[in-house]
Length: 359
Ligand code: CA
Image 1 (cartoon, rainbow, N blue to C red):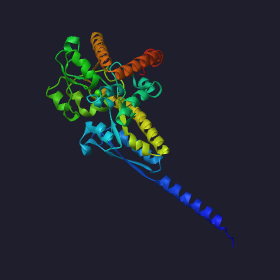
Image 2: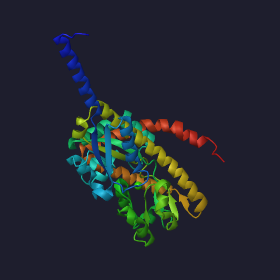
Image 3: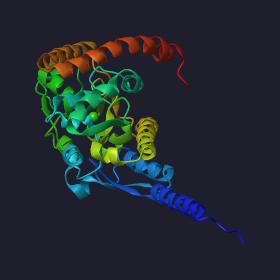
Image 4: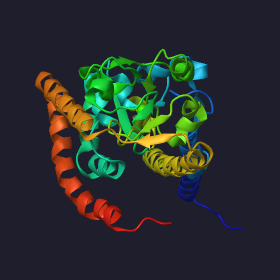
């Protein structure tokens, strides 16, 4: 029989206690609530937070569990910022430019007319100072903001009539949100923002003459191609990035490994949305080409593009004049775009211009 001294018994008991404590610690389950701006089962946009939550749960072996409430449940699609800030939800999935009425600077972290493409903008976020600027802004509201998935280049919209000159924009009634709406308004467009569910009827009944939504990935299921024959290429949302918002208090309560799992799941799901959007657009454009040959794909004439660019620059100057932080963001984006576009020009652009298209 092995006889243990009292000291040894104490040491063994303490070691067992520590082992039990660390097992209990490792198995603690963190349950977080997420609010999304989208309706239940909204394709692509809604797939992204679902992918994120599933990945986080698997990677953490069930220690991080995230439930998602869609707009149907919380009834406040544009209240996500306030709800996450208040701690009513731990995480939100939405888009930064939806908060521009509250905080104008938020608009510059989604996409900008004539701005960066998706790879350029991701490079700016992660390596060019974008994340630091976003943190500087959202930190003031006790929030953390992360890229939440990119639609890629958006189409310029569906038009009842062809746009041949700047004059054709004057008096045109169009649904177009964000900074692009302000640019078009400067050229005489009567800009409105209509909820997605009412868009088809508004265009069909000529309440509006034109609208922009996303691109083939999401437009085709809305049916616009049946009622507006002209489908214009984009200029206004070259890289629309959705957003994850995280309440800072929630983040600080998570152990370091779960913080990293959450960070990686958000980043991976955002990247996945970008490639899913690319795939879905290719698929749906093939459907348009084969089943709806009457759809006329157009690019705005050069003088229209020049007028849009001029209006855009005037508006940017006005915003920068009124707000030093916006000036800091716009200066950072302009400097980065100048540098990164030089590379895009002699890489992707030169390649696409020089290769023969596949038959
Ligand atoms: Ca859009």
